[in-house]
Image 1 (tube, rainbow, N blue to C red):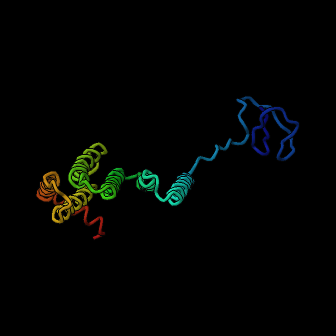
Image 2 (image 1 turned 120 degrees about the vertical axis):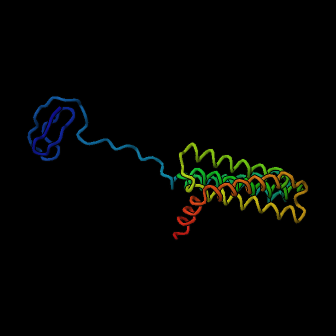
Image 3 (image 1 turned 90 degrees about the vertical axis):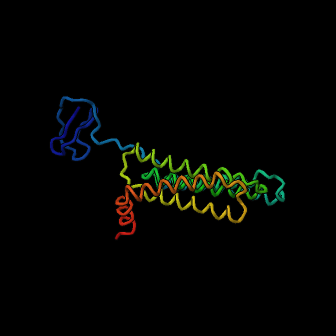
Length: 221
C-alpha cells in the first residue's frame, strides 16, 4: 500500500507518483483497500417501482381492452381480469403510501375487497352472496384483525380507535341493503351490526377519553 502525505490518500498497487499531485509516494502497511470508497449500485426507488407497476398495469389494460373490443366481448373472463389488474394496482399504491400504518392498510384492503365483491356479485346476476355473507363476516373479521394487530404492535387505543368507529359506520350501511331488499338473509348483517354496537358501547363507556383524544388529534382541536 502506498500513501501520499500531501493529499492524504492511500493508493492501491504500485504507482510511480501520486495521481493527484504527482508527488512522491511513501510505502505504508495496511490492507489493500481502495483509496476512494466504492459507491453501491443505486437501488430501485419507490417512485421507479411505482412507475414500472403502473406501466405494466396500463399495458395489460390496453391489451385486454383492445381484445375485448375487437371480439365484441366474446371472452367473458376479460372483464374480471381487467378489474383484477386495477385492484392490484390500487393495492400496490395503497401499500406503498400507507406502509407505515398497517391498520390503515388492512382497512383500505377490506374496503377495496367489499367494493370489488359487491361489483362482481352485481355483474354476475346478483345472487346476494356479497351482502348476505361476505360483507358482514368481513367487517367482523376487520374489527378482530384491527385489535389483534394493534395489540401486537403495542399501539395505544387512541391511535386506532377511529378505525373501529369507521368500521362501525360501514357496518351500519348494511341497513340500506336490508331496507331496499338487496339483503335477503339479514341475520349475518344484523349480527355484525350488533357486534359493533357492543364494541362501540364498551369504548364509549370505558375508554371515552381515548376516543376524545383521537378525535382532537384528527380535527386538530
